[in-house]
Length: 462
Image (tube, rainbow, N blue to C red; front, side, top):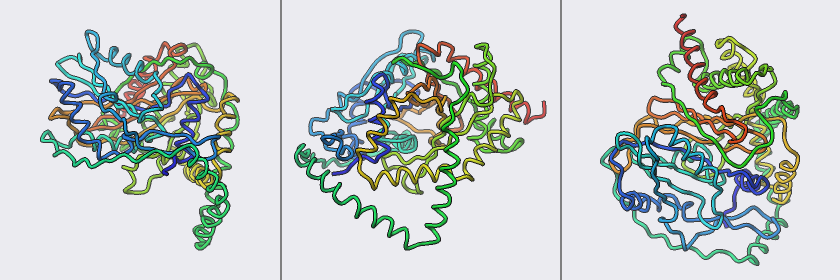
């Protein structure tokens, strides 16, 4: 039985404890017209399914949480149930597409089925159409989710030949056999943990370096235990979501990097910092230096692991410098804070924690997540994810993909989340907001573009 990793299982547990939240992630790709028929697109997805076995599996929990849930084949999997068709109301512009994304992503996924959906939306101007790829966070993280584009879509208009399909579903284990297997694993847990420690101990220098980095990182992350300054950016939330998006050119970002320094991620976070500052000011609130702490996921995948459907991420927890009015000072501050968090070993500490959890019993992990959601957090205000997408255009049924917009879920008093996605020379920002408390979501989205323009003027010396 293939079990979920502790991190993947935690996304399920978080959804269980916060019943108003869906923990699915998504991206929406806009294609040139004309739109294919429903039968054509259905056949296109069906012929690629052999490349993604996880899309034919569902999650089965273990009685009493004695072990992490397992992936089991779903013999009744119906592609037609997972591929949906809809149409945008006129005029089919960004506002209508954003409302569709928010509505689809608000709905929780059916755990009795494989946790993925494709929504084809017609009615965009010029005969264009969109595909919303929705996958539960327990299945993929941002990097592996992006890799699905290389599976279901093509690098050229010519497309690819269908894949041979020899799938024969395996029988799902019974509750009795799952319980017995979990009890055996519990009995063997100490021995497995000792073997893992022994393997690492055979390389004392590596062990020493890793231990020091992990301890340093844990100390750096411990500062995140302090609550952020009170603001309207966090607090109780409803179930419904809002969504907005904006784009900037990667050439502009590179111009800023060359003139002012930093990485693409630094520039993006500096723009987001300026946007949160503007949002606070528009609400009549003073941007405090400790008002916006963000969770920044960090991929810890080794080269070649991008296509493995799983969650392999760690995190950093810096404050965004919303108190700084000068855009260049904000960029410098973001660079310094991310560099300090990396140097302090924050990502390594996160990896160490998930590694330890993998060698221990699952029940404490499940109970820990439940406890966390019964004690409302006041340490995080937002989440800011950044995933590198395809650098060259992708195609579906001979149609070129023109844009891709990302979506990140929000939960537990985090009223706003921002996802960043690069594709074919463009950096797209997807902003998720709580419907009840973030009616001004467009203010933040527009301010991201404005903050980037400010940095571009500074780069040109104007």
